[in-house]
Length: 95
Image 1 (tube, rainbow, N blue to C red):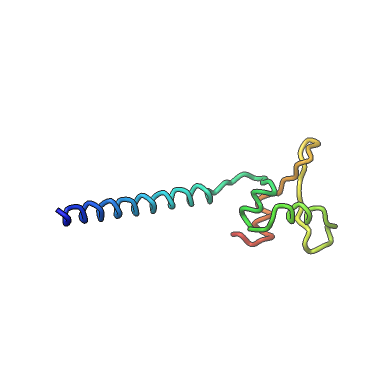
Image 2: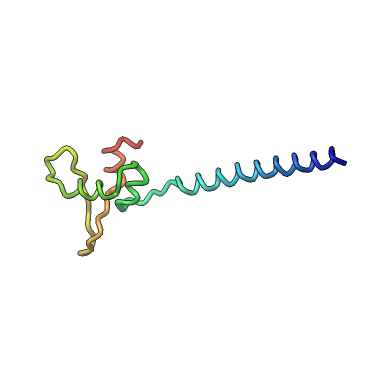
C-alpha cells in the first residue's frame, strides 16, 4: 500500500516539475519577445540594456558633444521621448 502511495507521489512531483519548467520557459520567452518597432520608449531601452530609464532620459538631455549623449525623438509636441532602436543597438552593441 505504501509503495503505491510513494509511486503516486513521485509521479505527481515529476509532473509538477515538468509543469514548472514549461511555465518558466513560457514566461521567459514572453518577457524577452523580440519586438522590432522602429522607435522604443525609455522603459523599453531599460529592458534592452539594463540601464535605468531615468538615466536614459537624462543622457538624452546632455550636449550632443558629450560621449554619454543618447539621441532621442519627440513626436507631435508630445513630452514623451522615443529612441530609435537601431541607434540604441549600435550604442550599446546589442547585435
